[in-house]
Length: 395
Image (cartoon, rainbow, N blue to C red):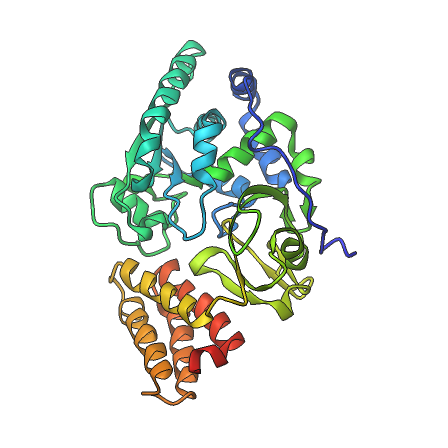
């Protein structure tokens, strides 16, 4: 087995209850800031929200940015269909996230942290506030000037995009901003900002506690460490699992499939649908083309068996994207509507089958011209479903 294609391996870091967070925090903030940044960089931790930007580099750039007012933001707007891991982290091990935010603030020079909590997670607000109160008491005790507050979102999928999240925090309509400038230079309130998702912060806690090597030794080149996966769909083992990155999708299906898995949606509605014939050549991670096909994921893994209609699945996804598009840019606003109307017309026989090729070109145009990740990612699921299950779009 190539180093770039690992067997499925379960790991147990994130959900291990840790009563030593006070000691970890105090010990960590007494280390040189550059040493901490170097440790994060050497761990090769990448953002676990799906984009995969190197976490250590993000913290480094923000620490070097000019400005006395900086922010640390935890993106807990877990809106991707099929993903439900972040709420479990905040429920079971919130102090790991709070500690990571405080350490980040210490490194980059921020005194304020914000948890942007998904509107549907209102039930988490009170227990999180209690955890924050205890955490703040300890910060005062060790003279660490860092405060954390919660901001409740309103259920908009687009606000999971970092710049739309900033707009929402500032009391504006949640719409993406142009990039550059990037958050490390101009983020919340146009100040240097570190924004990480919940799981990414939890992994930094692991790295600061155990050291970069323990994390780096997991996974494969370009895909180091472990990852939480939200497993759902046609599976006898639904739930949340921490697995080593770099595993093959074939091994994943062997473990979690029901014996008749037809396809797996990797990365939620904005991800890719992988058909059975490509399981063996597909790995989960950021390896690129090193082993054939390598797909990153924010954590959502939805399995579908032969009883599922891929047309109905795509119809559902496009309804979702049409509803959640902020409407700011034309490619996404009009494109989502046209793709949905197009597949319905083909299915009803109102358009000939070759019309699907025109729709594929439209989705490709959206990928290159839409302003943010929502419109750009529509092509992922659309193309992977239409190209691999074309017959189900027609008959």
